[in-house]
Image 1 (cartoon, one colour):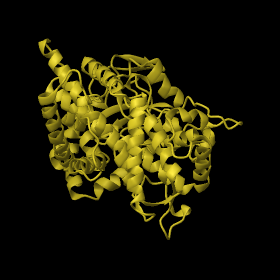
Image 2 (image 1 turned 180 degrees about the vertical axis):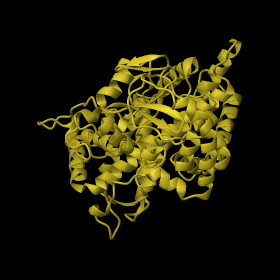
Image 3 (image 1 turned 135 degrees about the horizontal axis):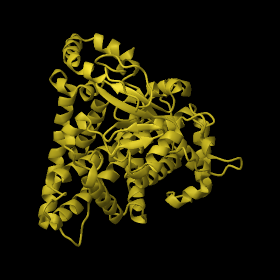
Length: 500
């Protein structure tokens, strides 16, 4: 019982449990005493903690997979006082997110994100505010070149800076997090209209703050705050996180201030500029959705999610090439056949590089980077024989899809052949959904795909990645990722051996 062991290890948490027990004595006779035949089956909840004793707080996704073996693809869990419906496996998740996309389009009120965003932004807002902000964000990104040759040129320019940075280590070991700089810089250039030198104080400060926030979001104490927000005075993780978020907001406010002073309708250089210009356009409307709070929240969302996911995937990609040198060599040979010497690969080259494309897809499948992001029902919903009232929290498990045995031959092994046919041609797989599906799918999917392909091929075009001296491939552990907001690889070192 991982959660009980964690709770009982702390005197403060023992006091917490006593207080929760007192409060719950008032709640549970009214809640669990009533029969309920509308929700899917699930394990019987305990007083106060519900089913939390069945979850590993560091790997909730793996706990969910085990429970699905007993209760099926649709089941109910109790997170403390909250009832949650869990969806597992490709069929159930796709059914909800695609067939019933409008019914499962909302986000539930998660306490920590309510504290941070107050219902604003791109990711955790709902209703008309979400629809308008998301639509505007996607249009703005297209106008800034996302999905076009312009952004491809920027990515390749950034690749050049990353390669030079890696060369400076001269084959000596360096940390995997070094690879965060390039994809982060692409996002910052879109958000703020300029790329940063890797040693720029603002850049290094933002990298540090993003790292701290992501780590705090994976803290077991942060989960406890989300389960029992009324006991927030006993916890510290969410307080530290809110301070770090405010530090990021200070930087964002300065960029908004500068944009308001220098705005030029004929030259919108960044997402911040676009938001500020939109805000001015909408001042005549009775309800201005693009108020300062929503501007800051929208930029904050992209600062965090827009940097963490691609940067962490690139770390995993390098680590997996270290672990499987034969796969790395095969990718390099394909790059050598397709890409002209002295040139970078283009995004269109992926059509002629099936093995490399398969490896990149398999990296994303294998690492299950973002196990799930909760949804909630936007209306009373009948789903697979069950009745889910409006506002029901729903967890569509992406891990369960990316590891679904009925769709992947060796789900728990790193196997690029998952995306290749018998002739070695690349094959799309319907169960490949690391970016989720439906109207809430990842807003940066097209940019992430382009970045991963260009950065990955460019790095393997210039370097072979090896474990540091004294270690071999077998010493590299992939089984226990570091749990933050995403599943990161454990902090490790790599050596980049130049190919030229």
